[in-house]
Image (cartoon, rainbow over all chains, first blue to last red; front, side, top):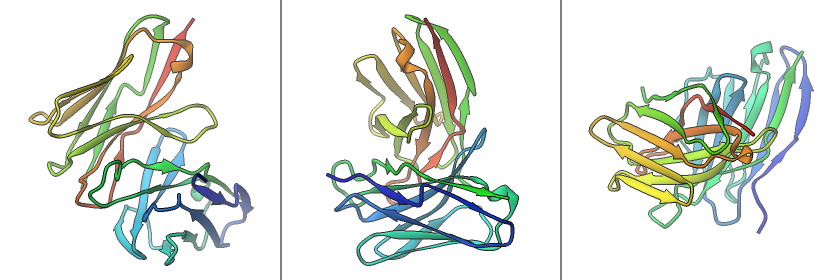
Amino acid sequence: KAGVTQTPRYLIKTRGQQVTLSCSPISGHRSVSWYQQTPGQGLQFLFEYFSETQRNKGNFPGRFSGRQFSNSRSEMNVSTLELGDSALYLCASRKAGGISGANVLTFGAGSRLTVL
Amino acid sequence: GENVEQHPSTLSVQEGDSAVIKCTYSDSASNYFPWYKQELGKRPQLIIDIRSNVGEKKDQRIAVTLNKTAKHFSLHITETQPEDSAVYFCAALNTGGFKTIFGAGTRLFVKA
């Protein structure tokens, strides 16, 4: 059973550019969440998608956006990159719904973004 | 808004000792409380979880306790081993919603 796949794994951008990250969830998982991880800041919630709709959003500026496709794959986009956007971006999928194990998050390996 | 506070941020114990990590949540609607372990350079992985209708849950050397009234929950690791060294994150979720909120993490060092 394939795990959560994130691409690209590493990328370097310059300030002002934009970036798109991709996340393929575990087959059968309908929800995808995105988190920003920086040293000392833990896992900051960006947003969660379910059935192609953004269901909740964290406290990030509008430069951070995302979407989910009909096959549950998700992308997140960051526009007008700033130095402070350098971080590891983790996506996580879960089954969601009222079934056993529905709330357990399975994380991808992350996309490490460096903004110069 | 929703918030999860986690303490301590760093914990160092001798091998064989116990370790306790404590968390407090703010959203009364939270009813699911997982703990994730993240080893260096790896992704977070679930190690144990507890629902709001249960006060305590054990799995071998790890246990989690929940006090709904005080909005506190804790992770207990007994007989610690060097391989327990990692960052541990507590989290809270309202299972009717779509937002798992994590604590800031606790870096646990187990000295051999």
